[in-house]
Image 1: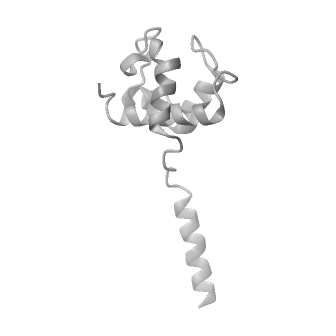
Image 2: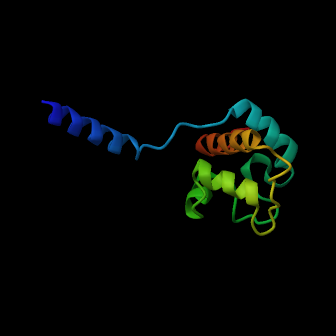
Image 3: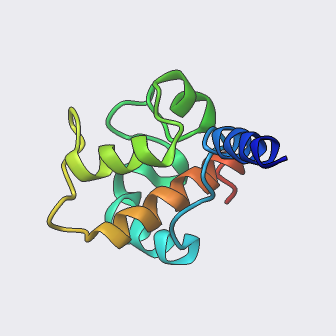
Length: 111
């Protein structure tokens, strides 16, 4: 019986480790961070620098950016024309804005 319980526990942990984590940050705070730091280039989920690479869900998926970790890495380190926000935003603010971006992408960037 102990072996069965142990096996079930191990299987449960293994299965749960593949389930995406819940959104980590605060969407309300993330919206404020986005408005203050990102909206000038990404208003409404668009991209004024490169119109092909929006923050819309389909584009985030297409470019391998549809995850909290990918968005946080992009915000932290920058890439291409996008500046790095490491040092300007603290880790909590980066979590919050990544959560906001992902939630807005899931909702189709409602107005």
